[in-house]
Image: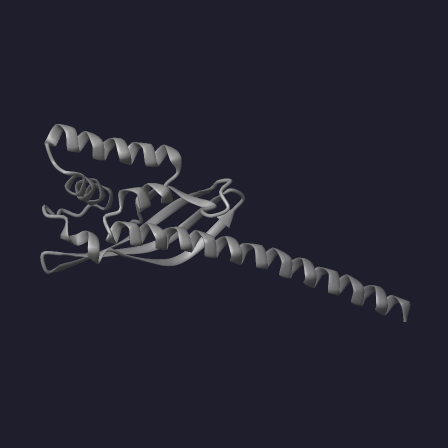
Length: 160
């Protein structure tokens, strides 16, 4: 009888640990997905501050500097400069920036390891009546921020 009790206790502890680990992973996965959803929404609304808030500080600084540089050198307003930068990031040519409101980012999978996450996503948008779609992998870094614990550190096209 004691042998069964020990085995049952060991099994219960193993299940509890598995549930605890799985619960943490799903919470982190949801947070990663939430970051990408906020990024998508900020792009759709041409909200530079919202976009920057989703990015790792180094990436945010680079994007903000690019927007400011385009604005200063190109004599374009912030919206036009933001549209140009986002166009370059995703490889979409759209002179008037109308594509921003049509951006969709569908998260296909998320893998979390320590303070880093990878999210395979399908990016799509419409430009002048033409639908564009491509696969991207977002890299996200965990930061010490309760409201936005994951930040986009980079993304690159996934080659088929």
